[in-house]
Amino acid sequence: MPEEDLPSAAPESPIPAPEPAGAAPIPDAAAVPATAADIAADTAATQVQASAPGPEPARSQAGSANAKPAAPSGALADLTPAACAARLAELFPGLFGPGAPKPLKLRIQADIQQRAPGVFTRRSLSGFLHRYTTTTAYLVALTKAPSRLDLDGQPAGEIEDEHRVAAHDELVRRRGVHEERRIAEQAARRQADEAARRQRDAEFEVRRERAALLRAFETTTLTRANFCALKGLAEAELEAALTLARTEREQRPLQAQRPDDHRGRAPQREGHGDGRGPRREGGGGPRREGVGGMRREGGGDLRRAGAGGQRPPQ
Image 1 (spheres, rainbow, N blue to C red):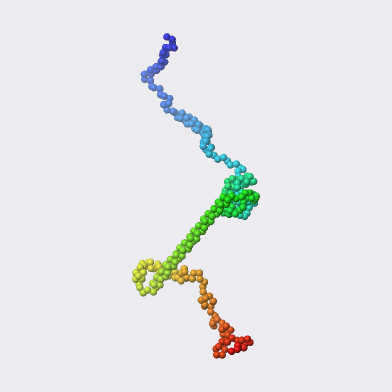
Image 2 (image 1 turned 60 degrees about the vertical axis):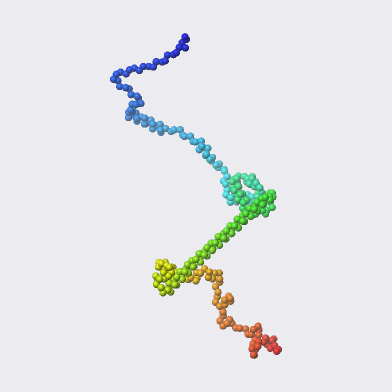
């Protein structure tokens, strides 16, 4: 039989030598307690490793992806609608000059960017044009103007009927809203005036009752207890009402506070009630002789004097 076909013999494990009797076992190195010098050396090595600068932690990909790029130094700033309108009036006075708004040419924003590059941002122009073309004055111009205008104020196409109709309908809607608001405000004012009038009347009525209570108390022959029983009031309530009534009588008379007294009337003067002024003493001056130029003669007949003072023939 060939040698490669023979089974190989298992390696023999070394047989440990027997320990001598009475010898102490050798302890493991990990189980041996460290001395004070060893502990100090390990502590110093640990501190040196901790103080050594380590590698800088890499930034997360998500943070770097969300970081906004720095704005270039020459970027345009957005203008407010007022500043944009002032700048457009300087550059294109034929269209955006002073006066009533004019119907704009379609796609006017592209023409502005072409004629004035680097002046307006797209956001600034869009905000201004939206506000400009939605004003009531612009809608009125859109319904009345014959054509649209370009940046030089020259005609640039007719206004389509659908645009005129849309502007007219929006104007009608706004007028309706304005009228409804006006009616609502008038109704609110009337209600407020009516509420104030009712409050004044109620306050006057309460004061009138207190004044009547004071007059009744000052003229009664009843004792205070009987008067309180008659009016259905406690003595404390009666005293408070009387004190307030006396104060009101001293501060302002009741007749001068009545809300419906002499409202809107001019004070009348003494004398005639028809506004002719005061009467004069002595019957208003000398009275003319006779009636209608006639003078009394003889037996009391009234005869008209003729020319030259002669009597008319009888």
